[in-house]
Image (cartoon, one colour):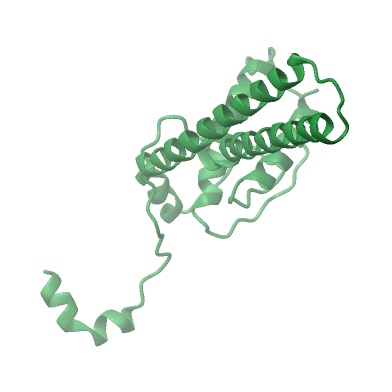
Length: 192
């Protein structure tokens, strides 16, 4: 069960986030000092380390190895804890769930308008007796769609505010060129 949920998680995460995370990896890794420095800049509380390391954009390589069976005891990382970790990862690196609510709200509104149009056409052109519940159902669908749409819009704003509060840097400079700084000494002097 653990392997299946991990397989699903990695592929879903890669499809809904902007992070190109290596699939089927663990948290055991060696990182350069520059990657560690960038991780220290990220001040968020719920950290998904695999995602943050990939977010830094530095090159990654993997070493394949055969892992032995667990030496002692059982893992304390049950399905609920794994689901919470997945939720932290999705919410920390993607606004796609918010956009799904927004799009679903639009679709429900469109469906209700089409349903209302069909009811009106049947009543006007075919003189079909329309029960009151048909209009009521289309009105309920429309209002539900509007509510979902508004929730999705509010979610978009909340997602943007959340991205700002993560306080991740916009850019990461992997190396500085000495030639640039030597040729622009007047810039260095004015910055001091």
